Image (cartoon, rainbow, N blue to C red; front, side, top):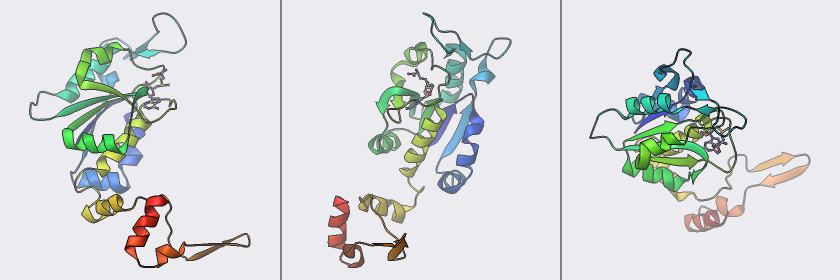
Length: 215
Ligand code: SAM
């Protein structure tokens, strides 16, 4: 899977991609990440990527031309690749694990367009047309699309073969509980004892799976 990220702040991704699962996934070539900065695609004197909103109002809107040119560069000419364009937007389709799984099945390349300021000129989506979908990571407003893109990249990468390794991903499918415990068996805090549920110590995997389905 190749992720193409259109952002005016590519540095924001550096530390996250340079460690842990993402680092390994990139090193093993299970995923790759490419950046396109709209500022590098500007045709105006001061490399401006934003302008005032029509109809008035506070803040600035990201302009069409640098984003579309960056998108065309990301899109390339290959006919073999299966592209999806995601425009990060708080009002878009809600991102879920099911969405991540489907994305891995259907596409070889995902382009993320990260908004900033008051958002992106609506004509970006109209120009890209059916190939683009607005997607949200939740019902709250972030300062920019970069964190949202990172959340999706992490979640989608987990679904790419070889990223977690078979054993781990199978385990992930099996454990449906949010309530997990590790050693020690008893934790004491401010005079109170917190212990691990008996069923998890029983060795009975049928009972354990049943318990996990309900916790
Ligand atoms: N009024 C704008 C709107 O409704 O799109 C909010 C703009 S927000 C300050 C700037 C950018 O952050 C958005 O263009 C989008 O790319 C990103 N963003 C903010 N919240 C998001 C969320 N929950 N999910 C995905 N992207 C988000």
